[in-house]
Image (cartoon, rainbow, N blue to C red; front, side, top):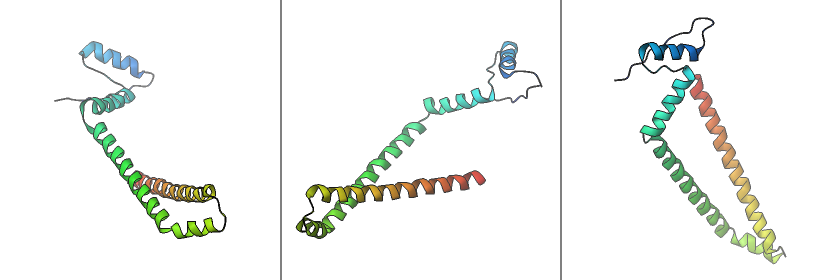
Length: 130
């Protein structure tokens, strides 16, 4: 079982000096607040599967999100073939038709990204207030 002892510095004392003295006198590991925080982070990174599982979850979410967005865009193009055909009949070039589709995809993507970032920000602010 690991045990932790918290100590406050007296005015004028530096954390590295106090940590070194504790190590010399007790033989135990002494860390400053920042060093302890990084030690904790590295413990989770090296000895648990949390980062790998989180990375897999994010990766799968990205792949599924791309698949859904691609499928939705494909459906949009198939359903609007008549409109693209009408534009083509009026003399619009294939390049311009493609540009319309790309611009629509970019606008929809930007709106979706903005909503996602805005919602994440609101949720983070709500979490910080509690």
